[in-house]
Structures are given as C-alpha cells and as structure tokens.
Amino acid sequence: MKANPSTEPSKPKVRFELQVYGPAQLFEWTAGSAHAYPAKAELRPMDAALLALLLIDGPQDRTQIAHLFWPEQSASMALSNLRQRITRLNRRVPAQRLLQGQTRLSASPELQLTSPCWERLPAQETEFLQGLRFEQQPRLNDWIQIQRSKAMAEQTQQLQGAISLCEAKGELGQALALLQRLHTLHPSDEAVLRRLMRALTGAGRQQELRQAFEHSLGHLRAEQGRLLSNESAALYLQLKAKLAGDTSLATP
Image (cartoon, one colour):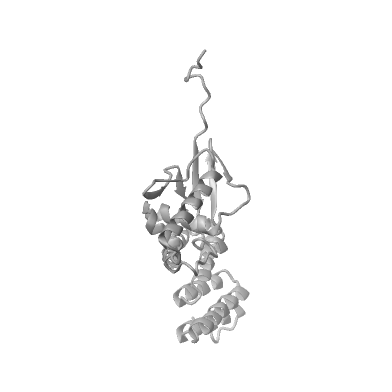
C-alpha cells in the first residue's frame, strides 16, 4: 500500500548563511534553530572566497572564475580544479547543493550572506574574510580589498549614526563606547579623536584620554610620519588640565 503523501513527515526547511565578517563560517538554519556547519570549523579560504564572490557579484561564467582562482594554470586545468572544489563543497551539505549551474555558476537560493550589525560585532571580527590573503591570485586579492573598503565605509556610517542617536537620547555611556570603537577603526582621523577626547573628559576618564591621544599620535607617526595637528594637541592639553583640576590651561 502506497503511503499517502499528505501523511508523510515533511523534511525540515533548511537554509544557509555565510558569515564573511571575521573568520568565514557557514551556518545552517533548520526549523528555526541555528548551528555552525560543520561544527566548530571555518571554511577553507578558497571555499569562503568562492561563496562570497557568487553571493555578492551574482552568477559568474565558470571559465572566468577558474581563471580568477587559478590564473597561472591552463584553462582546462583551472576548470578541473573548479569542478573538484564545487563537488567537495556540495558534498559537505548532502541535503542541499550550495553551488549550481553548468555554464554559469551561482549560489543556491537557500544560501545567503549574514547581515552585519556593526556595533554588536566584536571589534576584532569586522574585517571582510578576516586574515585571508591570496598573493597567488592578484585579481581575487584586489576584489577582497575592494569589499573590505566597502565594509569599512558601511561600518563607519552605521557607527556614526548610532553615536548620534545615542547622544540625542542621552545615552552617553553607549555613545562613548561606540566612539571608542570608531576611534579604533580610524585612529588617524583627528575629528574622531577630538570628539572622543571630549566624551572621555565628560565621563572623567583621564587615563583613557591619555591612551586615546597616544594611540592616535603613535599611529600617525608610524603610518604617515607626522604629528597630530596643533588643534588636537591643544585640545588634549586643555582637557587633561581640566581633569587634573588645573584651570590655567583649561578652557573657560
């Protein structure tokens, strides 16, 4: 007797998300629950870059992808390497093919990118495909650098908006924490430094005021071979004196 399809248990709906900020990981969502897949493991660098490329730029010609990832090999060898990588990736998730398409390769509709909430991510895990470098694939490396620049600009804009919102709501402690994060991202931005120094002074944090100033100063010396502007240096002295109770240097 054939089973009634309507009475057979349905397979749980499965979708996947690729985490591209910080260490690359693939997450499997099943019936409302999330867990890393495979458990406690990161994707191989080439796998992470391939999935990210297809999710961000859309379907790609297989020949072009093969040349991007294996530029020094013949077209036939590069295509063979790509086919093997696709097969290995799809075998990692038996219930769902992550990659599909014969001539043009695309990511499965069930595979998506995670949407970052920058102020909630650990500061050390905001780089696009963190730590990955592809020196033997210069065009792929250039593409990753472009994505990192875009991510930095998006993160900066989101943080600036969140800081302004916190200040408007009087949540000065949270605004200060976000300002410190923004300063970590842009230590050579003197406008960010001056804004942070004022906030630290308002919170009475003398030691952190000195640390922020010295961090920016050291970064500018090392990266650009220059000192802080007179405006920033003078503000630091005024705020330092204010916290120390020396009114001779503090602004009225």
